[in-house]
Length: 252
Image (cartoon, rainbow, N blue to C red):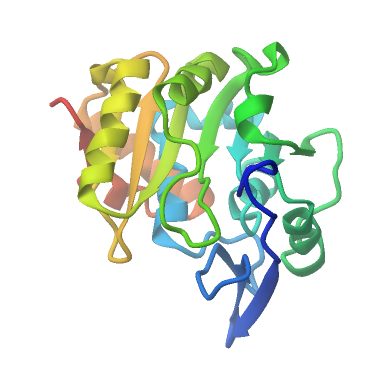
C-alpha cells in the first residue's frame, strides 16, 4: 500500500501454487495467500496471530464487535472477521486494483451492511472522527510492494490508531524485517499506548513479528488466557494455545 502522491500504484497480479493462490504487487513478494479449497481460512502463521486480540474479549461478545483492517492484502483478515467471526468489518485500502483482485481472485464477498471496503489512504481516513472509539479489533498490515518496511510507523500514526479503539479494543500490527526497526516500532507504540499495553509474539520462521497493543492495559492470568485459547480453538480453529506460549507483555 503506497501513498498516491509519492508513487505510482503498483500493478496487482496473482500466482497459483498447487492448492494455494498468492497476491503480488508487481514483484515476487507474496502480499497474501488463499487456499483455493478453503477461501476463508487464514494461511500464514503471522496472519493467524493478527487475531490474538480474541484472547482479551469474551468469545460470546465477538459477533457484536467491529473489526477494521488497514490494508486489504488478499482479503484474508477481512473475510475471516466477516464470515467466520460474524463481525461488522471494514477494510481501508488505497489501491483500487487490490480491491478488484480480492473480489475477482480471492473470494471477497460483495459489500453488505456488515462488510465495507473504503478506498482511501489509511493515514488520512483514520483521522475522520466517525471512526473514533468504534473499533474493537484494529489490524494493521501496511507494507510497500517490496515488503521492506511498514508504510505507516510513526508516533502520530499510533496515536491516531489508539483513538480508534473502544475501551476493550486492541490493535495488532505485523512488523516484518530487521530487529532494529522492530525495537523502534515498539518504542513508538509504547509511547502512544503505554508500556503496559504492549504484547509481542516471538518472530515466525518467515521473520514476521506480530505486536498487540491494548487501549486499556490488562494482564490476564495465564490460566484465563489458556481457557480463552481453548474456546478460540474450539469455535474458530485458530492455534490459540500456541499463541499463549509464544506471546508475552513487552515490559514484563
